[in-house]
Image 1 (spheres, rainbow, N blue to C red):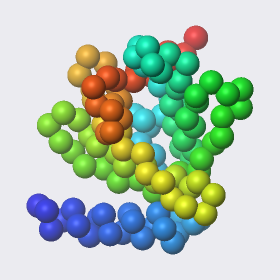
Image 2: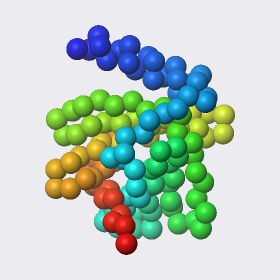
Image 3: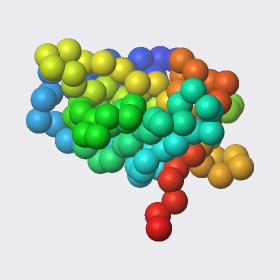
Length: 122
């Protein structure tokens, strides 16, 4: 199984680095604006759509970063998505774990102790 994952990761990495205009398919389960009840991030949000990721940290017009690649890996607690996004000339990575139990939630890979919930449409 590990041998099947390696070619997929290599292709995704090559596209993230070198295929600037290649369409990236961001799973619809990640689309939306996500908020957390964690008090340290009461003012923050994470927004993901088909083409961009936005990290809202309180500024009126947070920057939008184009998504250039995405990888997925299924695990016991959910699906780990690694989103590659363009920051100037560099490609940065955001790791999120999508969980379906108890409603949809995201956990940041580097901060798994609390979850982010999708904002409901009004």
